[in-house]
Image (tube, rainbow, N blue to C red; front, side):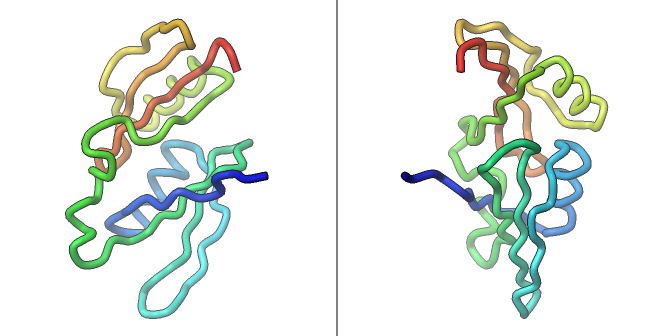
Length: 128
């Protein structure tokens, strides 16, 4: 068996990233462990998910890639069992959606940006 457990996401600052992912997206903090020299192992995950995101503070030339790890394409896909609920909560929390919700053959979806400009899909699938 194999599974993707973590995806590293470049961030400018651990605490500002935590505030966004926890307060605006509603993710939970899995781990925040100091590793010395200002480095931390910071992991968040959506409620009910096995997959998680490692918030990795960019160093050196990596800073140029913050917010553009996928060349402007949708980078991450946040599935929900209730699009209207989560879209409403996220909008009220200040998450910036780039389009209105649209109905596709596979479900309801809308693109939003995280605090750095990475594009995400919020999606409720009609077929699992």
